Image 1 (cartoon, rainbow over the protein chains, first blue to last red):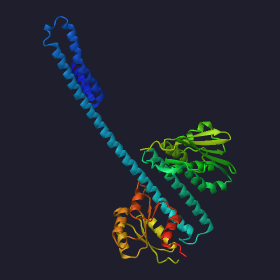
Image 2 (image 1 turned 60 degrees about the horizontal axis):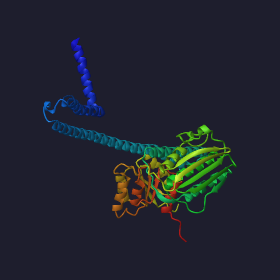
Image 3 (image 1 turned 120 degrees about the vertical axis):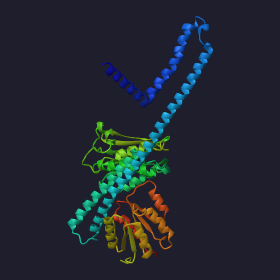
Image 4 (image 1 turned 180 degrees about the horizontal axis):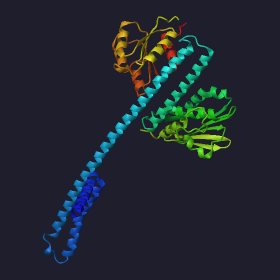
Length: 330
Length: 129
C-alpha cells in the first residue's frame, strides 16, 4: 500500500516536473514565488527577531538585505534572460512556420492554376479548331454544341480566376500596387465597356460622374474589378428596360461611389450575407456569387468600406473609400 | 494564304495542347513545328528558319525563361519574336518575361482569336500605303 502511494506520488511529481518544463508561464510563476519567498521569509525573520536586538542576528541586517537584493537582481536577471530566450525561440518558430505556410499557399495557387487552366486551354483550342472548321467540315448543329462548350469553358475560367483571386487576397498573397490614377476614368472605362450589354437589355444608365479628374492613389486594375463587379450585378439584377444610376462624389479625403438599380428588393436579412463567398440572391442568375466578396476584400484592403442598402423600389451599393489608400494589405 | 511561308515554332510540353495549337496555326495558313522541351526547341531554332515562337513558360529542360535567355545569346535567334502562352501565374513572371524581350504575353486559357490576332499582327502587319 505504502509503495503504491509512493509510486503515485512519484508519478505526480514527474508529471509536475514535466509540466513545469513544458509550460514556461508556470515555470515563471514558480520561480517568481521562490525568489520572493526568500526576502519575505527574511522580513518575517527580521520582524520577529529584529525587535529583540540586532545582536541576535547572525550577520548585520543591512548586509543581509543587500545580499538578498543582489540575489534577487541576479535571479530576476537570469529569469528574464531565460524568458527572453523562450520568447525568441517561439518567435523564430512562428516565423519559420509562417514562411512555410506562405510557401505552401503560393505552391497551392500555382499548382491549382496550372492544373486547371492547362486542360481548359486544350479544350478551348480544340473547340476553336472545330468551330473554325480546321478539323474538318462542321454542321450547324455541331457548331451550336461547340459554342455551348466554349461558353462553359469561359465560365469555368472565370470561376478559377475568381477563386484564385479571392484566395490570394484573403491569404495576403496579393499586395496592392498603389499608383496615381483617376477614379472617374476607371469608372467610366468600365461603364463604356459594358454599355452595349446594358443597351441589349434596354437598361438606361444614368451616370453622375463629374467630367473633371478625380485623382486618387489606388490599385487601379483591382478597383476596376470592383466597378466591373458592381456594374455586372446591376446588369444581372435589373429587369429589362429598367434603370441603373451611378454617382461618384468627393468628400474631403474620401470618395463615395453609389450604384442604384431598380429591381427586386434585397431582403433586409440578406443585405450583409450577399457579401459572403458563393452567396447569390437568386441561384438561377449567372455567376458564382464571388464578385461581392472579392470587391469587399479589395475595398477593405484600400482602407474603405462597402455595403448594401435597400430603399424600395431601389437597391443601393455604396463604397466609401479613401482617395489615398490607407492600407497596403501586406 | 500569302503567309504560308511563315514558320511558327510551338514550344509546349503538353502534347495535346501543342497539337491543337499546331492544327490552328495550320488552319490559319502558317507552317507549325512542335518542340516538347527547350533543348529540342533551341536546336530547331538553330537548324531551321523560324519566324515566331509560341512559348510555354513551365517547361522541362530549364523552363521558358532560360530558353528566352539562350535565344538572346545567339545572333541567329535573338530577333525572333516570342509570344508567351502560359498557365503559370507567379507574381512578377510577366515582367520578367517582358524584360527578356517577349512580344506578347497570354495566360491560359486564352481565346484563339486573341492569340492569333497578336500573332497575325506580328507576322502579317497591315501593308502600309
